[in-house]
Length: 125
Image 1 (tube, rainbow, N blue to C red):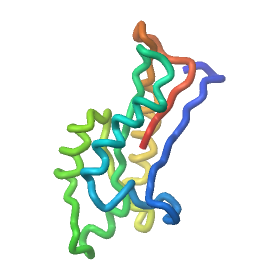
Image 2: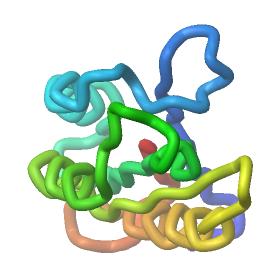
Image 3: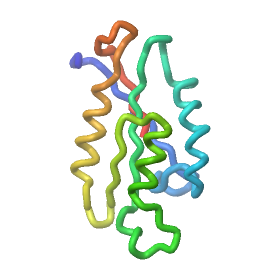
Image 4: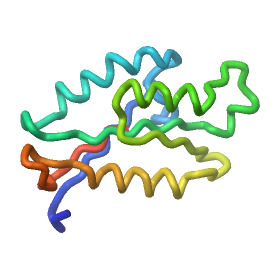
């Protein structure tokens, strides 16, 4: 990647939450979101926008009745044609380092119509 290349992270979450939750309580809402990402952020017809879905608040899985298991989130990430799925917990620090490494890897996937690395990138989490 060029030294001057830019990578844009779009972090979506519920209003007023400091972007610590992902979109909405319903994972089905993500299906419409995926099409919007391509429509609004793809700069050229041949540009491929890498997308990573990141499950947050992993530490709450044991405490919450509305548990979303990793298998379910991973299945949805596959349906949405995400390049990667990961999860982490900011509270416990669990998998934080790995999540940032994954974000960097996915950001490097941006390509042009001819398959070359794009000058800039857009990684949507």
